[in-house]
Every structure is written in structure tokens, then in C-alpha cells.
Length: 258
Image 1 (tube, rainbow, N blue to C red):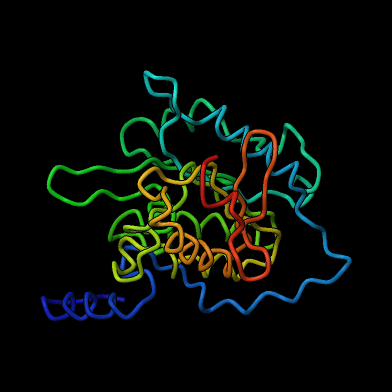
Image 2: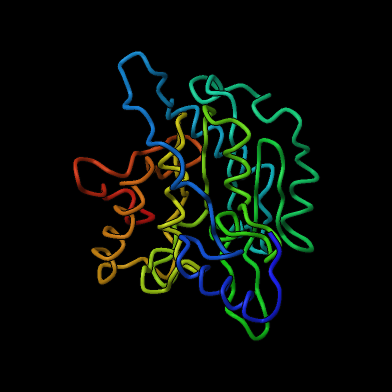
């Protein structure tokens, strides 16, 4: 398709506001995918102990440490054979070079895109708002790209096991704030995970520091509930994971770091 003149580009900009994720910001085309089939008792089940080992691997291999020894924020997502999410195997990311991943996300564009793995750190600008790491995986890299890193990853294996991980929980100010629109809020873009047919999980390790406290507890629970309604939500330490949604409530372990 060829667009000629200023009017054509204006039309594209207008259309971008009508597309979930925006033009070059978060289009996933997930709306064109048929809803996933209802699970049956014979379907494989994601193993929480295995999930904890996967998260420990992410943190060990990819996370940069601050001078005080604490880890920095990053996000990573994988799409692997389902068997690797039911029993841990050290070769679950065979073909993805850990050194190259760590180099890519901690220097330059701070984004890595591979066959089984995508990862990012936040992107900061002098005069523009920062782009959080979760959002970077769910948005288009630039205006010449119309499929997000996450959608590309999902397209590689429509029945694989997908784990979307962020070290800190999605923030209330931007990532879970629906008034911010698709450039910042990740909720609409999670539909691509909802529609994925394989095993899946959205995981964080700790509650974001600005969202801790009794005064924000209810708001945080409401925001995390919106995530958990679209994709199974877990909080994982190095040794174990807890599923955040029980009934229609977010469990206390997912609302604090104690």
C-alpha cells in the first residue's frame, strides 16, 4: 500500500488512534485470532516449581546489578515447547546466547529480540516520558514496524508455553492506568496473551516500590486483577511461586514484599 501526500499520513495517524496499541506503538493483531479453546482435564498444566526455576534463570542470566547489589528493572518473555513448563530442563532456551541477551538489554537500545526470547530494560529520554520495559515488549519498535516484539514471539509457536516476566510489578501510574492510553498502559495489549493457545503466565518478583503501602493496596489489587483476568498472574521468588488470583481476589502475598 502506498500513501501519497500529507493527507495520507494524517489519515494513518487518525487510524492509529482507532487500533488497539496504536500505529507503531502496540498493534498486536490479536483481535483477529480466534478465542483459545476451553482447557480440558487432559491439558498440560504449568508447574509452579518449574516456573520458579525459569524466573531464577532470568534473574541470574540477564539482570544487571546496582552498586548496592540490588537488581535493576527488566522484562523478558519466552515462548518455548510446552514440556519445558511442566518439568524444568536447563536447555529450555537452547539457541539463545545469554551473554548476547545481557549485552543487548543493558547497552544501546536495551532491547533483545530472539527466536524464543525477547527482553528489554526501560528506555529513558531527556525531554520525553520514559518507556517502561513491559511496554517496550508490547509496542512496536518504531513507526516502520507494525508487529510488536511480543507478537512476533507468539507467532513463532502458537501452542508454546509463554512466560511474560517483569522484575517489578506493573506500575499503577502508567502500566495499569487505563487513562494513560496505549502508549503507556499495557492492559489492552495483554489480549495477545489471552488469545494464545498454549500454557501461559504473567510473572513479577516484587511489588514496585512506589505502589507499596496500605493507601495503595486496593488500587493495586484492582489493577493486578485486570491483568489476572487476561492471563494467569504469579508472584515468584527464586524458590517458589504463588498464583495471585484466588476466586475474584488478589492474594495478600501479591500486594506486598513481606
